[in-house]
Length: 262
Image 1: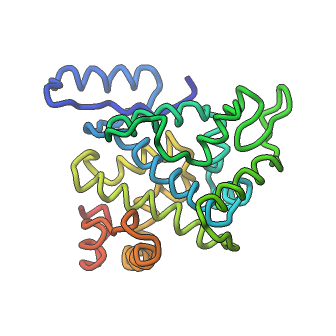
Image 2 (image 1 turned 45 degrees about the horizontal axis):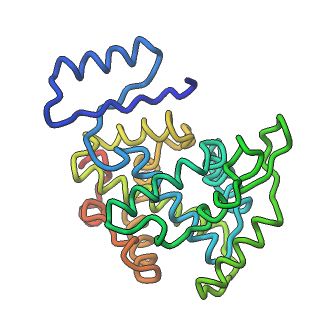
């Protein structure tokens, strides 16, 4: 009820009347409506999935939840990715991953377990259970780092054969913001969002992106798409397909333009 964002989804057979009525109703409710197209997760959650997946990968490689969250709140986010998941409820993501596995023809019971899955399977569902990535005192929403979760993460890395290492703040920022921007570029190119500013509005009003930085796509333009592309290419070489630069990002960077020109 506090969320200002309202994604209004236009389907293949959505009439102009239905669309304008939904947008008008959203405004009357005090929301900020943004029209989006149809895909898994629409705009906001599709980008958030890429962001959270990268955050989870950082845990596997050597980071810890409090460190990752601190980097993103220092950047200006209201909350880091792990505190957000605890607030939303870890069982929500768990069910989404089960559904996505089933959609790919994988038995949900046979899918590879993520760190978040293992936490849920310990009945740590987030703030509503007073335990998730963090623990919470009764009636207090302050996240408290938990040795049990640190040990779970270390054991998970060992099981996956991943040698843990120190990961500095710059790498955490580059990887989390980079995933938002690269996925946003794909969404823009596919026409799921009509313009880059729509993505920025979605992230400022719905996902706690710092308003003074203008949103992920605007911020990428300030940094310079050449620099964003170079970082993405470096991460692609190191981490594989999930870092394949979006064609739109590559084209705009080579043209010396920004997402506003897409």
